[in-house]
Image 1 (cartoon, helix red, strand yellow):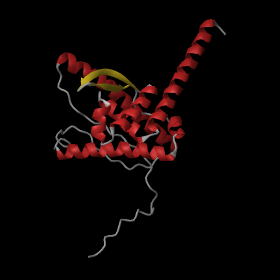
Image 2: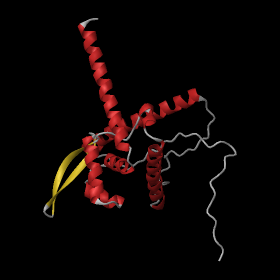
Image 3: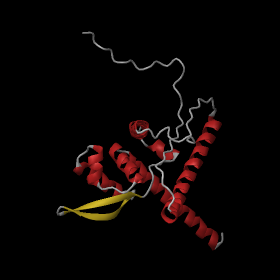
Image 4: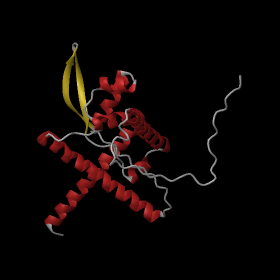
Length: 217
């Protein structure tokens, strides 16, 4: 084996180790629902523990504790400090998205996966409701909105999810290019949302959860 090949092999192993460590850190970060909320919030923009505690309705010591864990896991970083009434307020930003590959997702216990799903969907649905109430959800005629029941096999399911990840990666790259146009060309900014879901539907004839009965007065 040539030296260059050996060096390439070492770099490949090092890169795989870095990716594995990053995935492991994200698994640890997302294993607590409040850390997931914090990481998702910091993906939207810079914020301090104090600001997030008020947004989430949580205590400042609790939020600060989980922010510290996220920083130790290298999922977020400190970007600035601000003097506030004799104290120093620390502001953070996310270094990674709350995204897991299949193997990392499988490492999480079922309860943690359900918590991640619940928090993500609750946030998305709340944002949708806010948009509808503000009359911005249907304001544009060129928006995309579709719901498509599909009958797939394992191969088609895998390919569908792969295509959606390609769309997401493209959207994030386009967001970066848009940021440059906004900053340098004065392009108008737009608070857009992209929601993509694939899930297996409940089997036909599955029992629906019972609704709570109302007592008669």
